[in-house]
Length: 119
View (cartoon, rainbow, N blue to C red):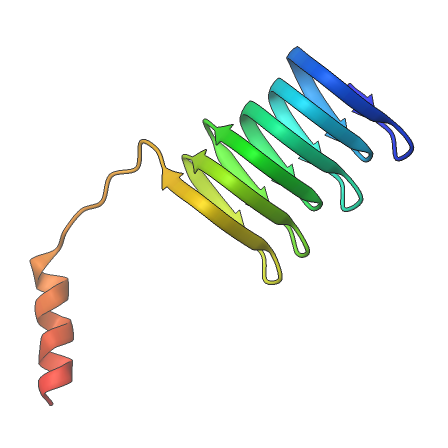
């Protein structure tokens, strides 16, 4: 589905394979892939597998896979993702959570840093 520059949609977009937004959306989006163009604006809730954002999103964004914020993107609200890429000049603000990500602690890495500091 493509939402053109001069189009504004209010409501639900469900079971969409690909959703490209160059205009405006207010409501709910469920899609495998969401792309918001540099002129696009979405306000509401989105539940997607992958998102590429160059425009604006405000609300609740859940990305089960990769979230890519391009230069000039503005994302505000509650955001969760599994993987993220943020280009210089993008803005991400609000409650941010990396879902399903595990971190390994390495005491040897910490020891190496402490040894460098002591020198």
